[in-house]
Image 1: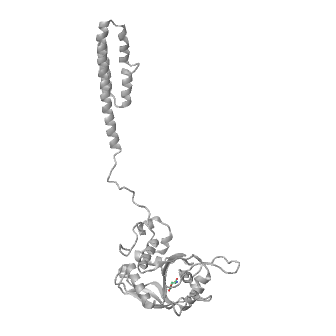
Image 2: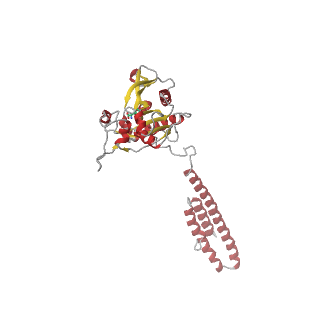
Image 3: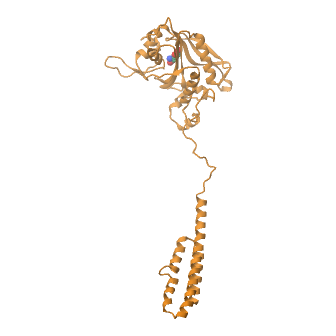
Length: 356
Ligand code: DAH
C-alpha cells in the first residue's frame, strides 16, 4: 500500500509538471494505459485473499481515480493555455486599413483628356476618332494643304514605305484629318472633339515624336466667329479654373481656316514662377478659325449653306501648363516615380460639378 501511495504521488506530481498535452498523454499511458503501472497492479488483485483483495481493490480504485482526475484537470488547463496562446498570436488589428493603398495612377495625359472631354461634353460636343495611319488626302490635300505647301515641310512627317501605286501613307501629323473623315461620313449639324495621338519627327524638351492633340469641329447653318470666341474663352477659363482668365485672339494663318486665330491666355512670370491668370504676359495655347469653304467642299458639304469653326490644341502643353510639368519627354519615359508624383488617383473622374 505504501508503494501505491508513492505511485499515486509520482503520477500526480508528474501530471502537475507536464507542460504539453503530448507529455500528459505519455503520463496517462504510463499510469492507466493497458500496460500502465496502476493497471498492472489491478491485475495482481486476482491472486489475493478475498478480504485483502477488497481492501486493495478499493485503494487501487481510489488511486486510479485520483490520477485520472489530476490528468483531466491538467488537460483542461493546458487546453485553455493553448487557446489563449493562439488567440494572442492570431489577433487581428481592426484598425489596419481594409485594403492596401492603391498603387496605380492615372497618367496626366489621360487625366487632361478626361478634363477636356468633360468641359466640351457639357457644351454639347461628342467625341470622334480616326486612324493613326493616314493618307495624303486626309492629312493634307483635303485640308487645303497642296503638295508644295510649306506646312508639309514644317510638320516633319513620318512616311511609310512607298506602295505599288507609288503613294506613301503617313503617321498623321495632327488630328485635323478626323475633321475630313467625320464630314465625309456625317451630315451637319456637326459638333465634335477629337482627342488622339499625333506624330512628328521632332525631339526636345517641348517636342516628342508622338504627342497628343484635341481637335474641335462645329458645322451648321448659323455658327459664326462669335461662337468660336465664346466657346474657346469658356473652355480656357474652365480648364485652368481661373474665372477671369484673360483670353486673346491673335490673327494667324492656317490653310484649313479663314479667318484664322491663335489663342493666348494671360500669365505672369513673377520671381521666375509661371502663373496662369491676369498678368503682363501671354501664352499661346491653341489654333483656331472658321472652316475654309474649300475644306467643306472637299468633303461634299455645300459651303454656301453651311459654315462653322475648328480648333486644335496640344494636350501635353495644356497638361504641362496646368500641372507644372517642366519637360515634355518625361511624359513617355514610363518612370513610375514620375507617375506617382504627377499621376492622379483613379476613380476620381473629373467633372465640372465635382472639380477638374
Ligand atoms: N492642325 C493644327 C496643328 O497641328 C492645329 C489647328 C489649328 C487645328 C487651327 C485646327 C485649327 O482645327 O482650326 O498645328
